[in-house]
Image (cartoon, rainbow, N blue to C red):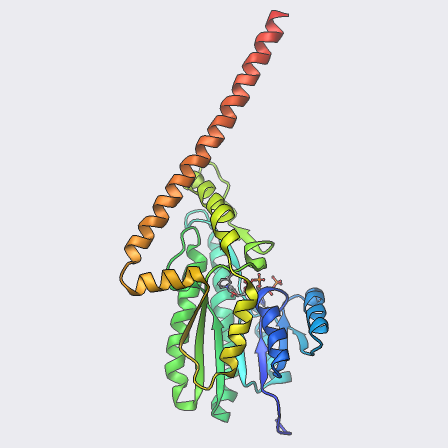
Length: 310
Ligand SMILES: NC(=O)c1ccc[n+]([C@@H]2O[C@H](COP(=O)([O-])OP(=O)(O)OC[C@H]3O[C@@H](n4cnc5c(N)ncnc54)[C@H](OP(=O)(O)O)[C@@H]3O)[C@@H](O)[C@H]2O)c1
């Protein structure tokens, strides 16, 4: 870096929507020099509109975290960075039996290996400048396992473990590593970007009836109660400005309750409650489905009888 920068430079991944987009805008508003990246440059519209509305600027560039060449190019073009936010991620729902190996690996490639690759590319310059901050957007699912989300949960557990190890390794160089663990929030991840595994609707799967209950629970109870994503973006920008950031940040009521219960040794009780809730919902859904089938059968039989008597 030839001239001394006045603003702190932050690199954010996954800024086409959700936390990434909102964090980029909040960071720009707070005076950061923001390099907001996304894998698909056809999706710059929402971020540009949000920046325009807030009357701030950010540099938008392409970065797919699974492409080593793109990581290298972004680091060469804009590095060194003061802050890295590993935000990009995908969710593929489905039980460990229904999700394919390729789908599981894709989740890990993006949620875990993508963050690892970025950290390895950006950290050496932070070490050289003896300062830096790496914020990994993990999840409550990385603290407690989420059912029908084994791949996602495992990738976020891995990311939290990686954060913990790198935090200690980078400690001598004054490079801080923070793990952010939000509960459910209303972003595209639980709407347009929510994937279900290839075999999710396979009637031969032993999980078929449970899958139906799980979806009903998501639609009726989890999604309506999800938090506003702006709360996460604002918190992340507070972390960026903190003199002594904490190791972990839990965001959202659901995440608070589950994390506290787990730390108090009540994880077993929590799991029992979730399983009971799922069983009840699955039973109700299956009854509804059976009733529909019975009605159809009865209608058909009565139509047959009428036709026979004519
Ligand atoms: N929303 C929640 O309830 C919640 C809770 C806990 C943690 N999180 C975490 O928060 C982070 C942000 O998610 P979000 O909730 O804001 O969801 P989102 O709106 O779906 O945003 C995810 C972002 O990641 C990007 N992405 C996906 N694969 C990528 C890749 N290979 N390279 C670069 N970017 C990629 C997406 O780009 P495209 O638009 O191209 O797909 C999108 O910009 C994720 O790590 C997620 O796991 C979310």
